[in-house]
Image (cartoon, rainbow, N blue to C red; front, side):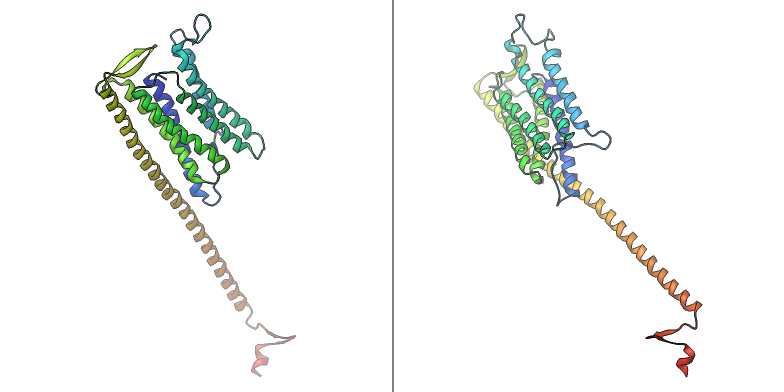
Length: 318
């Protein structure tokens, strides 16, 4: 992190993950409203663990970028083997990625083991990853007193929502709203990280009275006076409030559209199934009628059975 790409790339990963969970949770709930159970991750028809594999690839790429690709000497240590001050934030970001990597690895291992607690343990590992993310962003070594600090403070609110809903999901797996809010908060995390990247490292988008300043090897937004700082922080708060509205409208609209789509699909299936059953019943009835007609036509002198005695039509006339 600390650059435009460093925020946009992980932000895009969180956004896609949140959207993937959002779509699948809505679909699962519409299909099974009475028996809905929230899974910690979603398999695909072709590749069961593709979601977890992608998390592993993304986290390895993030760790490599933070510790080996990003630094000028392609390694994060000083000449005496210690961690220099300007690389402390690299280790913090890499630790967050490592925790999500551990979650993905153990999610696969736990899925291969037949155990009743495997889903709860997977959710617990996910909550630990969010806790690690919240802890390291809250105790960040970088100076976040300016507009960048306000962006990170609001990001911590979203991480806290993801953490709390993941913890609640351990004991409330049948609650759709908890899964819906968790997925939406992960999506919002990614969106806000991307917004941070563009707003903090695009000179034309920096608030009036503020500027880019090179500090400890990376650029930081600073403001010329207290009034400019106050204005910049207020604009960040307003921007966040607008995105809260946008994400809420997006989430509910997506739910309504997908609900209508999947419910319509199920109604068509049920209707076609009902028509087929009715056609079969009509065919059976017509077959019975034809068989009865055939039996009557082939036996004009059929007998009427009364008790043990039988009478032909001739006897009845007499």
